[in-house]
Image (cartoon, rainbow, N blue to C red; front, side, top):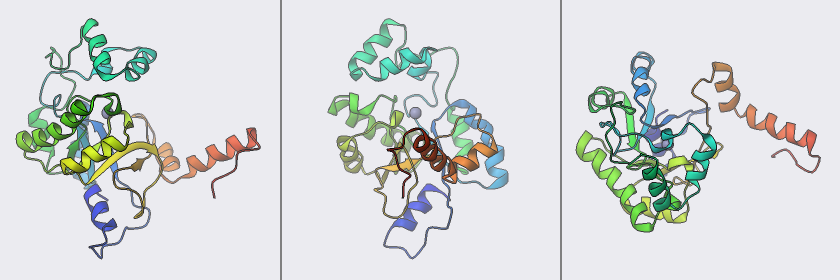
Length: 241
Ligand SMILES: [Zn+2]
C-alpha cells in the first residue's frame, strides 16, 4: 500500500482499514539509479515513496557521505557536531553547494517523469544528521526541503525520512510545526494503527537483497530468528512475546 493510504487508514476519521500484511516500499536520498525503477513500478503498479534531498536532486551536487569510501571515516563524520562535519568535509574538498562533473541524484526531468507513479517526499535539504545540528539549522533543513520540493517540483510534501534515521523529540516538534504529517525513522520494526506517526519504523534491506531476503525480513521471521539465535548464545535474553 502507499504511505498516504496507510496514514488515511490509521486515522480515526476514516472507515478504511489497514489491510492484512500491508507493505510500504520506501527509498531514501533520491539516487539517480532510482530512475531504473520507473518501468517496473509502472508495469506492476507498485506504490513507492522516494525521499529526496531537495538541495541535491536536480543538480550535480554530491551526497556528502559518498565523498569517502572509508566506512570508519563516514561513521566518525556522522558522530561530529554538524558544523564540525561540514568544516572537516570542506578541508577534504567537499562542499554541499559545489557542483561536480558527475551527477549522483535524480534529475529534474526524471522526477517530473516519475512523479505520476512515485510518491516523492522529503529527506531534508543536504542530509545532515539532524540531532547534531543547531536548532536553527535543523529547522531550516526541515522547512526549506518541504517548501523547495513543493515550489520547484510541484509536489505535496507531508512526510520526512530522518537522515541516517537519527531524530529526537526536537526533530519531531520541528516536523509538526512545519506541517508534516509523519516522520520515518530507521528504527527496525513494524507499524500498526497505534504507532506514533512521527516515529514510523522500517525494515532495512540492502540494495542487492534477493527475493528470499525480502520475504524473510519483511515477514518478521528475521527478527524472530535473530532473537532465537541470541537466546541460544545468551540464556538471559528472552524471545519477544
Ligand atoms: Zn539518507
